[in-house]
Image (cartoon, rainbow, N blue to C red; front, top):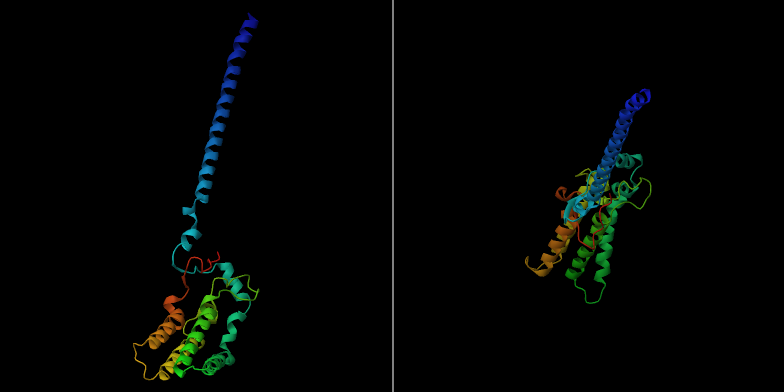
Length: 231
């Protein structure tokens, strides 16, 4: 009687323990599967092209450069930006007049070159050269700021992006004065002539419009020609 009673008392707790253990194991397996499926779903979303912010931004033709982060702003103020500060010197202002005179003199000595065509070529060469220098090339040739200016053109780096400073006003006035000089030496040319329209268009779109506040930090992205913004 005692054995039978002992067996009857020890049987049920063992069964309950086994059933409880199997239930816990099944719950742990279900949680593991749910976590794996959730991680796979999040990984799939992160790898999806539609969730890539940089790809979505680079697909637009016109875009604005994003503001600098706190770390980039600190890097910009650590040392003086030698790529732009030299533009405030008087010699940097005079060099524009020297370059224009040298270009005009070089084109005039070409046999058969008229004065009108010489000044038109001078204006075209100056505008293209200044556009490449101030609005096309980005960053600095000096490694002193951790790449804080890699997304900014030289025009945007001048005077720490402060608009309408004396240096900026001078750089805007130079192509305007050059255009007036070209117009003066093109006397007798109709205002709707090919030479006048060409000089007017290249001066406005190549030398004046990129310097206006409306185009500040604005980028025109051409597939295969314009480099992507560094993020």
